[in-house]
Image: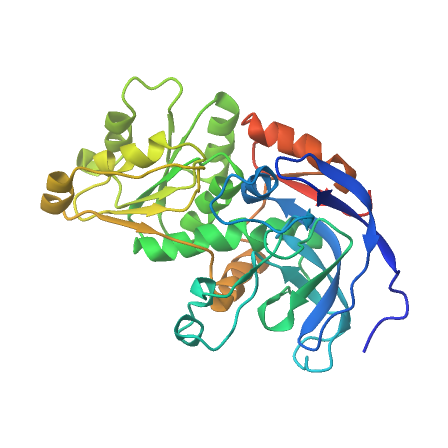
Length: 353
């Protein structure tokens, strides 16, 4: 089945060499394989991972040339002959995990992000910074039709990722969670998911604009690392009895916060590493970690069930994405702002411009 209105060419942003810049050019529109769908991408969120993909500074090599992007929201316009549960006209999302084998130990226990043979959108396969993108039907996000495609697009990575991290933290309603990098794309969503899950949020970031945003989104307290004389003491002071938060979500893009987190998390607390600063390390004193029974863990992207749950929070109006929209042709400008640390909230690109 296919729509008769699919063009043969489309506009896309292409990484032609490691380090960039992206090149705005026309490329062919692909035909979906038997287990794939073709999505007319209307909007795509821009994630810090997309910048890493262009720069090539992660240990996993990217394909070249590469169309980046993995927060693509659009409409299904074609499907392969084996696809039965996705219809032409459905609203669907392209996520970081474009596909997996569906038959390994991890896939069989709902840990498909840990599959040894993943297809990664905008990294090992072309992603959503194009007008028509291919995805494995089994892994597309099923977006409710009442959801606005422009506003929902950042949920497809940022939202799902922080929601998964909060679940991994084990924090329970009424407890405190510190979110490091709270004013950015992931952090601004993490505040809202945490609040919707009944948690109190200590937002950690820098600058008055991010302070204002975090408070508007529901943070109980804000610690400005740029002006604080003692971040560890200030975070602890924001919790009852000064014991520190029950969990820490690290969505920062620098290494230093990863080294600080175990100093202010409370005894028996959990530090969840989500952000991926290039070449960064995480370390903690063994003695302190043992006697305070601290857990340090990583949280990757969510599975298909996490995706459905994260989208349901959004559909119910509990999550509002703070975003700005620019044309796809302006993607390199977004990367510049991102590399300078000058983005508040999330950027979304409109593929028609």
